Length: 314
Image (cartoon, rainbow, N blue to C red; front, top):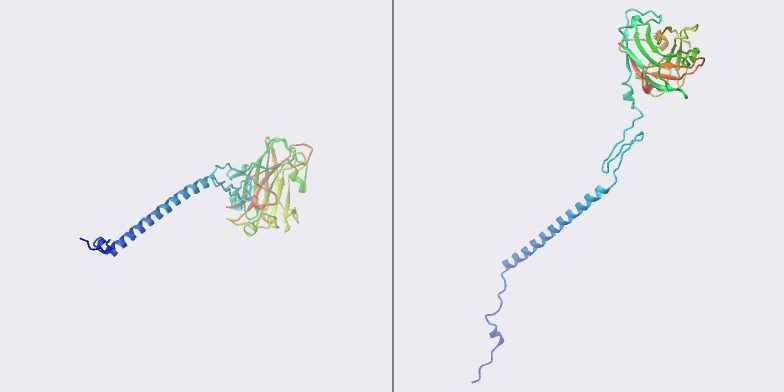
């Protein structure tokens, strides 16, 4: 018997794939997205780690930066990764210089006798001038000069007592040249609070005291004054200083009374002015040459009051 012809549609009947439910499809897509996102995060983290390692190696290889102030004069050894500031060593900022050489003068009930004998000065505090601030070319290097100062005051005068140690006494000069022989001098800034600066002015004075030569030429004094242009010249009107000296086995002693009028000052307890205490030396007989100067201030210069110390009346 002949069989009836089959329809292909009937052959596949019951065998069709069922379409997935819509919820299952969304979960599949979400899983794929999460996997992709996780992969991206892993890649980013790995990339950052590699970059950071490379950066660290680059930093180690870089040359350090050394910050150097414009006034620096010294050098400091530097390790490969240090940043170093090299501090200036030659100048002092003004605030430091003002605190050096703080000298005091004691008020006296009775004026000392100006005779070169220092027996009346035993209890007064002493200040040494032992910093070499000048030496002439050709100086032989001998350091045989020191000066010890004592200061006192009353309403009329500033009193000065100096004990000088010097193995060879030479003083052939006079007047404004006495600094070229054995002598001492004082530099005053009488208006320090008003015009403290690195230049001279008319309120600045220098008084040089000579012991004489102890063989006919007696003790003397000379007064200089600063000018508005920053120079220092012979002060008009001379001076009214009283000075006496005595020779000793190791040098000389000197005593002086400097009238406050010679400094254009009116004294008062607590008054502070600028002051440098200096001693001059000449060891070559028959000459008039300033060979060495010693000062109580280590950086003292003639025309810069900021390199001087201070004097306070107590």
